[in-house]
Length: 120
Image (cartoon, rainbow, N blue to C red; front, side, top):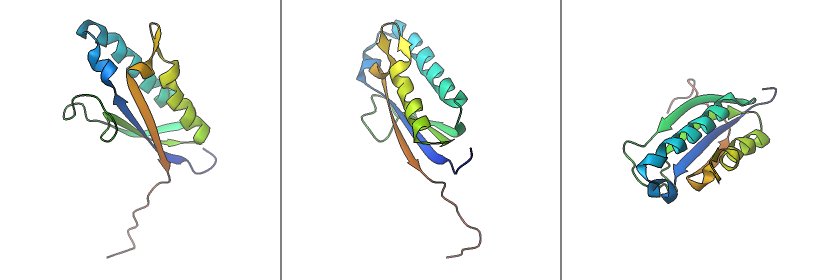
């Protein structure tokens, strides 16, 4: 990345449509979200720093904070962030896009530097 990357937190939540699915249909949704997450990880201009999954302690739809899972990454630019978010529109499950079952929000900023030479 030639310029300073955008420290980006991708916040992903599942919605009520996911919970309305019969159990037999959930598997193909998990394959699709896994495919989308792999696509984000493998995109040019994205370096995944870490992930966080809150599904063990948060059950039900994510209407906002707290989200179901998070991906923290350094991203080359805003267009790449948009392209990653757009995967929810382009990853298909049969006739439906993944956004029928999940939502995504990206928070962008810069890396917070915690300095060793400053004492309080």
